[in-house]
Length: 83
Length: 217
Image 1 (cartoon, rainbow over the protein chains, first blue to last red):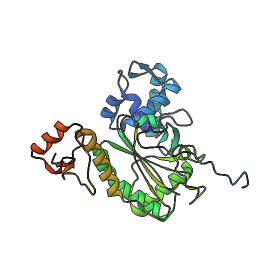
Image 2: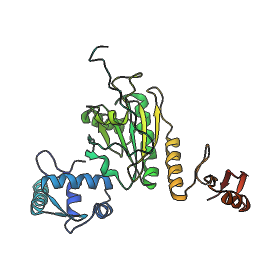
Image 3: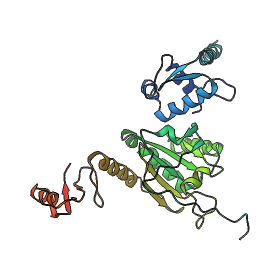
Image 4: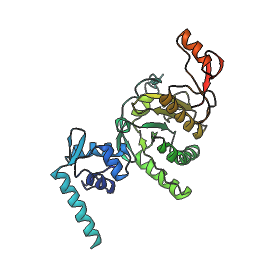
């Protein structure tokens, strides 16, 4: 499941995984918290790193301001869908 | 031989080697072999989407998926079809058989991964991948390989048995006999000294001779 759509928005699994690195977390911790496969979390972190949505702190990842903005965008998109 | 007809023959990967690294487009986005480290991986190829034998195999792999997951094993399929073709086929299986395929499938259109793993058997087909299975351990080492021809669907229970046998070997430092099933006796590695050989016979293991001892785990 690619986590970032071609238009730059987050996929559902992307949003879930990015939310899990609000506080620094290892891919194993993210996999446990989200129920996603570990390989998928690792692939997501690679994708997020390339997009500047997360940064690596030792063996942990944490969302960046750019990633926060993407999460805000996902939230706004959902509100728009509902209203 | 015409230049276009020439098929590059690469050496096959070998048991005990580090599995060749790759990064590829899949039905779950871009995945790398590295993403699967710390868990077992079954990388398998099929000849083509929308073909009957491959469809039966995918349905059978899906049945095996939870048992494999419980053993710490991930599944990753591959053929030379495009992601679009894979998606159409997987959706078709869901529609016609009511089965959702719970693992990613590599779209190896440029045959890069197939080439690295020797999945194309030019004597059988110069374009399609044969039915190959690569069992890769948590350290990325290639532990077992199975090759079936285009015509013959694989035996999923044998794949499951193989993984259980390899894990038993790693956990207990033993080997497994022919037709071994979990719970049955395992084979002790041959003793390396005269003293060890004598001790083994005296230890009350089931020994036909000093080199042939079995035990229950």
